[in-house]
Image 1 (cartoon, rainbow, N blue to C red):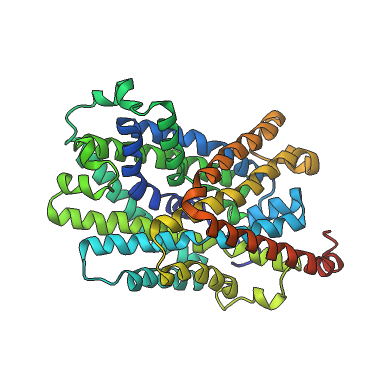
Image 2 (cartoon, rainbow, N blue to C red):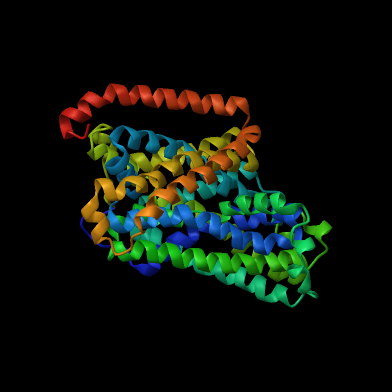
Length: 437
């Protein structure tokens, strides 16, 4: 992270965004969605785009108006207050247990090809690889990401194109009874689940000070990546639901149809080069941006300066190591992919509300930035969109309650209390140093 130096162009940012989006969602959740809404799954992906679009547009508008490194942290600090920004950051840190889900998913697919592998060793190994790659600098990470995203997209497109020839009847996707077998509620529930496969593009705002023309680049990359991924997912869903009878694919991953679509050798290449790469790209993308908010918070006085020390590649390695530990502990503890994914998503829904709701105050607190932003929303939308996002995310947290269990929520509550106590203790120092409070 070299200050004042523009490192990232459109293709670097697009590869990071695509790598962040394409991951556990499409390779794990497609089969679950089929069990909920049958042939409505392709349409559910399209509806999921509408659900994701509203909070994403909020972040894009903020990124265009206030581009900066540590983007979401900066938005919250500037528009909701310094104390709130640290609570947001603390939740973001613990929410990155989601890192473990990508690594565990990678290991489980590896075991499908090579049953003798040790799941913990493989999951921990891929975590170490992505961590080490990002330790040597953002340019190396971006090149690694670009290569993986190209392989991934080619694999998924090949799956889609090859699979469409095995779909005998496309009319099943146009019949209301097939699309809504469990009613509108079942369809909405499936779409809300599938939104998890589309989130991630908003994190390109974390590179605001490290990209070319951020005011235009942030919304452009977000929009293009979401559109590309949604079209790809719809094609994948058509193949996943159309090749085999629903009862044979419902609740299962893409491997079931891939065995029909591909020869044995191509099947292995698809699992290894497509699905497993999808999980690695998501893992790598998170490592590429996760430390930026903590770095900015240290400059604001919330953490000791020595925590933000950089290695010779310009990476704040202590903060990057913190996220590595957050991701690897669930692996070593033996937690399941499902539990880690649901927990990470629930916490993500909570901290995701902070920057989205910050948009509510943009025009009021930063009128000049709002007026000069290359991409801006009308004032009514800046009030309505955050409220709608609160309703969407609130439902997501509510739907996760039983899966996480009371123990998990109590631990999260205890963590929040500890963070608030730390904020109270640190506030006098921050106030004296920066005058932010």
